[in-house]
Image 1 (cartoon, rainbow, N blue to C red):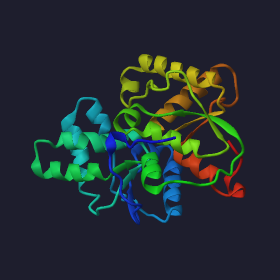
Image 2: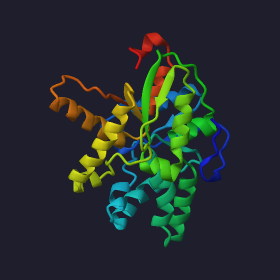
Image 3: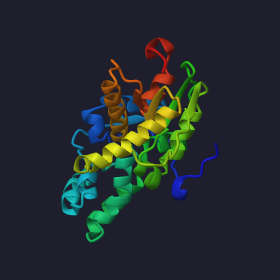
Length: 272
């Protein structure tokens, strides 16, 4: 698959050091995705620096119409990543927030705007970084499987990460990616949207789950934990209401899926 870097972005040579911006959802709900991100990068000879002072990227406040609150959160992140290293984010949503919206948030402050621009230019969504900077190429050690891929709206429209996520899965010889109908549609999560408009969110995610189930895929993979939790949570609720004892649509973050598929079989557990 020939890839054109999103918005013709130029990419650096593979660095020796990177920062990891782990995101709130990974920190609170799927820490294994953060750990697997570190392992993927360290296997490529890259030192990963995780700053414990990092917090939210500010997207919930920004997307809810509270720019002052978003700036208050964002300014704390501008103080942290002082070395000129890439900042790798296993989330297109958070990546899009920092890369696209931080410079806008501080457009009226020359000092902070310069810092926001510097940080935004060093931000890479994980799959983007693995494809365009690392040139990820690892043998697939897993059994044949079929998965569906979901890419978040921000990853698709602000980072172009749908192309790089597909490229990574296509590089795994035993993995078939089942294409769902209306693949570009939202899953209904939208951060606070799912809380403020639960009925609309439920309808959207129900459509998404149905589209994924219709592919016959054994599981769903996503590089965004919010979408993944929303999709698999709705699927699990449907299964519970149907009287099933376990979910019929498990999910996994792309980082964990890649790590599991490309490590020694004895250390991976069962294949997906």
